[in-house]
Image (cartoon, rainbow, N blue to C red; front, side, top):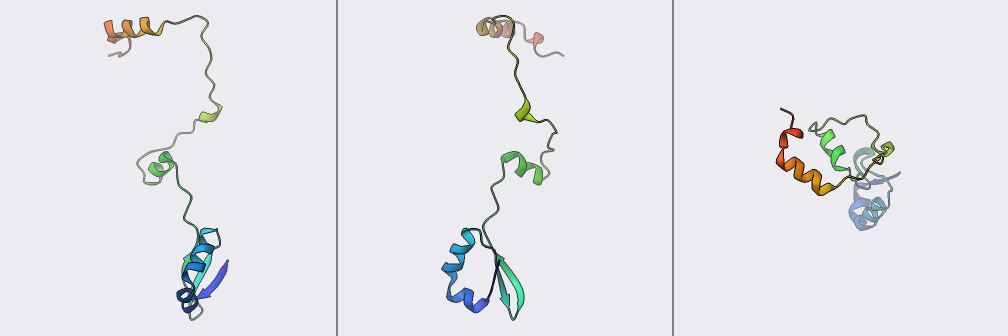
Length: 95
């Protein structure tokens, strides 16, 4: 962390912005009183983290990275399965 005064920041702004973009925290002081802090922008959040922070989504507890998908014991013809769903949608949409 680096402490500088306002006049130093004004005189060498581009230098301190480069330092901040490299991850160095810079505290700007006015008469030895901290008034601002420069630093790198916060890391970008994933879409679900952003929605959770704005209270628009409640995060679950499932560990999706540990999820495994088991194989079927028999072959399934996708086209026949889709045709059956189209003919009898109540098989999928239980009312």
